[in-house]
Image (cartoon, rainbow, N blue to C red):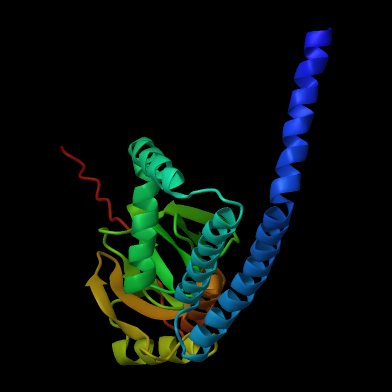
Length: 273
C-alpha cells in the first residue's frame, strides 16, 4: 500500500513540476494555436472569396481554401510544439514511416485522392454539368477529393470513386441531356408536312433551341415511314419533358389526319385439290 502511495506521489510531483516549469510555455503554445486556427480560418475564407471573384471553379476554390487552412494550421502546430520545447524532428521521421506503411495499406484511397486532384485541376467537368461515365448519367452536384457525387432526375445521389472516372470516356453535355424519339407514319403521307407538324409540337415544350431539334426520316419500316426526333432538354426534367413531347407529337399527328400504321400480315389460304 505504501509503495502505491509513493508511486502516486511521484507522478503527482512530476505533473506539478512540469506545470511549474512549462506553464507559461504551455499557455503560450495554446494561445498561439488558438490564434493560428482563427487566422487560418479567416485566411481560407479570403482565399475562397478571391478565387470566386476571379471566376475560378467552385470546386477548385474550395480545394485551395482547404489546403491553405490545413497548411497554415500545420505550420502553427510546429511552432507551438517548439514553444514548449518539443523537437519536431523525431515526429517528422515517425510520420514519414507511418505514411509509407499507410500508403501501401490504402492504395485505393490514395488513388481516389490523386484522381480527385486531377479532376479539380484539369476540370473535365464542373458542378452543374451533366456527365455520363461508367454507364451512369447524372448532374454533378459535388466534386470531392475522394469521390464525385451525381444526382439523377429522381433525386438519387450517385457516388463514384474518382479513380473510376479518370482515364475513362466521359460524356459531358453541360446542363442538358439528349432525348430521342420516333414515330411511324403510313406510306404516302406528305413527309414535309409531318416534319412541320412535329416541329410545331416541340415548340410547346421547354426544350433548348441551341442546338436546334433534329427531325427527319429515320428508316423505312414494313408498315410505314419511321420519323426520328432528337432534342435537348434540361437533365433534371429529362423524363418528364420526353413523355410530354411524345404525347404532344402523337396528338398533333392524329389531329393533322396522318395515319399511324400498325404491323399487318396478309395470310392466304391455298385450297389444294
